[in-house]
Length: 210
Image (cartoon, rainbow, N blue to C red; front, top):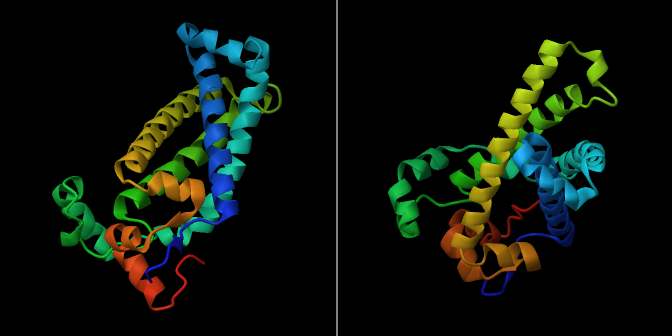
């Protein structure tokens, strides 16, 4: 176990970066439509009409790519008793005293919480987006439901954006995380330090990636 360990396969990394690109495109186009002060962002998409056309398709594409990742990693994000203990020791977490924490599997409690928040936000965005998608679906719903869906859509988008900011910050904070998603591999020392439970499973020959 002194060799590097594959943390993400090429298909997983490609899918992740596809979601990331679509998130920024959908986010920018959505912000352009959200408030007149941000309407200038429509210039990135060829103007207002094109922004209105492209935004929902970008959102659907983002959801489809994300849901593949969600199905791929859902079983690694099941809540366990040790995750609750990990959260209780948040002071050790923020001070990088990882040797005091319970053994962490493939993902820690913070990553698991983020995963489920992202999934819920994506589901709400999809459902409400369909209701307010004027060209194809909005005529099927009453005006009160459309107004509620627009409000929930904006709220879910805000939660998603904040969650992604946390995700990016955490990736920068834990050195080696971004490299793992770029190249797919981590050192055995990195795995042993940050995800001791996952490392032990690998050392025993148990393929916890699959």
